[in-house]
Image (tube, rainbow, N blue to C red):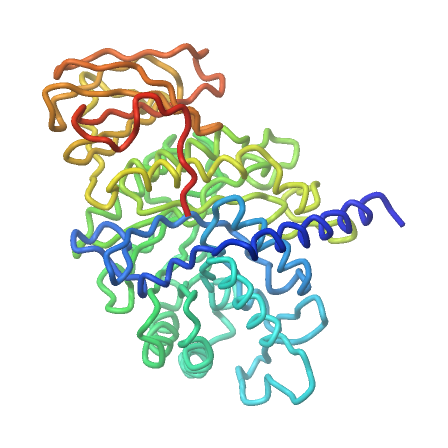
Length: 479
């Protein structure tokens, strides 16, 4: 028995213990608050009873194809422990698509009348199993119906047949989110994407829907006016500043490739206003630019920056990604983009485990009432890594400082004659109370080396509010 196999068996033994302990407590099921819908201010997602929903997603693209039942169960339980509540998957990544059991999902005719056979645990039965195990863990499955590179093999007629099949099969599952597209520009066969979306919606009006676009673009550019589009999604992508590689229809200025907050602004410029999210930023441990495997790799501080920039710019949540996990890399599997770690080891990488602190922070405040407001930053804001991004409610503000540069903040932008302020470390969720402040423009600095993974969040509240205690030293875990 190999060392890797022994470690994996040990992990499953740990899972059994974890699941036994979990059975003793109730797992939070977000849909117990009703289905997801767009908030009244058209910026966030909430449940029918008004409970806010903060999307903390992961790009688990090849989950249906590469994991067996035990592995999927382990993965989803671990995801719940780490705070993730949405898994973005590819339902069909090829024509035809096969899973780990050798079962075929589809044929080129898109005839779904014979996909299930008596006594056979087929492709769709395995996908059903994954969706149900995700539900057991309180996790939504964001189903990218067919990857964009396959659009040439699906015409309008096939799209309608496929949409009918999906809508009828999954309309009663509580944890479905629909994703049209898949890493593709929206002007490529838009009539086919429209047909697929409308066919799904005809049979399933319960679940929300979006479009996953090509890197460095937003779905708002093409589909913002569609009746089937509940919220927009952008893919900020994997390029560093100044790295173009000639492979995209860019909608941004040169040398702004890492400024994912710009896509939020672009999306919000469209009418009608719709919520937006970064559905695919730079992955942890993937080469900068994707294709040169000798290039530096994105680190935990990079994925933190993408997450906090996006959310404080106005996104209703964020999707994380890891090079090894998105393709479920393991020994013996041909890797893409230079992935080296087995996926179960990658789940211990620092950025992977740090995303939950963002969710806990947002859920500590009435964030669905907030808007991004850079006017709280007094004076000239910085560029690139010096960019400071602020989210402001009526009585609180959250300011993300990536580089560690000194900043001046206008505390008069929120209510209260006196303010309380804390520093939050996004690496571990630790809080440090700064003190009580006068209601004026105030300078803030903290003990951290410039651009050396010392990013911080400044939290300021009306001193009369009790969102946080002045004696509190860490964020509280949230569902």
